[in-house]
Amino acid sequence: GRHFHRHVALLFFFGVLAIGSCITMFLERHFPAVPYSVALFAAGMLAALIHACKSKDSSLTWPSWYSSVDMWSHINPHLLFFSFLPALIFAKAMRLNSQLAATCIYQVLLLACPGVLLGTALTGCVGHFVLPYGWDWSVSLVFGTILSATDPVAVVALFNTLGVSPRLTMVISGEGLLNDGTAIVAF
Image (cartoon, rainbow, N blue to C red):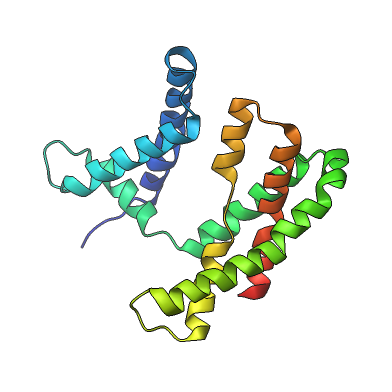
């Protein structure tokens, strides 16, 4: 039988945190114009490509790291969802400027409620009429619901890096907070 060491899963978790910290320091010192989210995406794609191309038994593979990545790739998505989402929503809500949020609430609600419903309907139409899968309306609208609630984390991070207007940043981040609720109700 194969013996699993569950603590090996922590290797990937802390390794990714360390790699992210190194990327941050490297970008701040050598390439301050490169957005952090772009560098993280590139590093993640590179790591996934290396992991996919090398076998577990390769002499160039670190077996513990390979096992750790394998454990994380098979994690229960609900566990990940219920562990990180409340903390992310709470952190976003705590960073909200309440006075600025009050001035932008109508724009945020317009984007988050009718905007998401319109996006759901249009994406559902594309799924029904354009895509070659022959989906009925219920499947097409579920597809539209899933795709219409975008997450603006990378956009807001880029806005903060570039020094975009706080009002525009508030509208985008507030819409990101509320559109998930609209999409869940539509789902």
